[in-house]
Length: 247
Ligand code: 13P
Image (cartoon, rainbow, N blue to C red):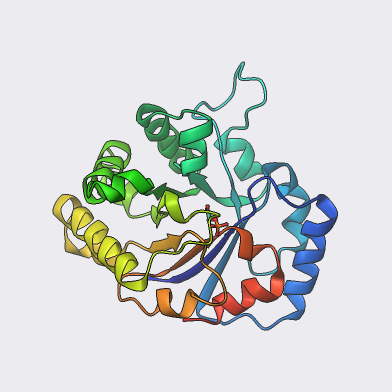
């Protein structure tokens, strides 16, 4: 049975105080029982939010692939776990673009995340020009197979995949529900080819890219969309809740 998930990616936003206020407000609201809430604050705030996060699960925004060592400024998956995270984002297009993260690095990160008992939320998606050139299916298939298909069945069973078309992130342009469903169906069939039907039917596929209170209902009504990875609209508890109520 697939879970319904609404995950917040705050990126490099919020302060310790606003993050704390977010959870204080969220804890006063009635969150739908059948929807999992996951919040990825800046890594720095994970530990401090642990006691106030309520039923939400915490997620790191990034980690290094090594367990420890001379990597100034970096944080390991072990440290995220120690700080109270249960999940970690990996492969976000902003990391691929601004930090030039390669497929071999992403693969190693996914392994480190799993080895430390966290669940990876693996992000993939095509750029605008890749969609214009009609290569979006190939791009997404290559990302997933290069970065994830070294995993065993039991490891892959712990991965959540977020399809985030780069042209929709932070732009106000959202994939239509037809576009989202088409790609999510495709991703599930790529997973089926490699890992078989049981795993493909169970893998949670989230949509990300300008998902908000206005379009979430439409997107979440798609058969293969199991929820959302939300950026801008996730920092206000009321709108985060409203998105969770959109299934
Ligand atoms: P926006 O919802 O702000 O477009 O961001 C999406 C995203 O990148 C989530 O990881």
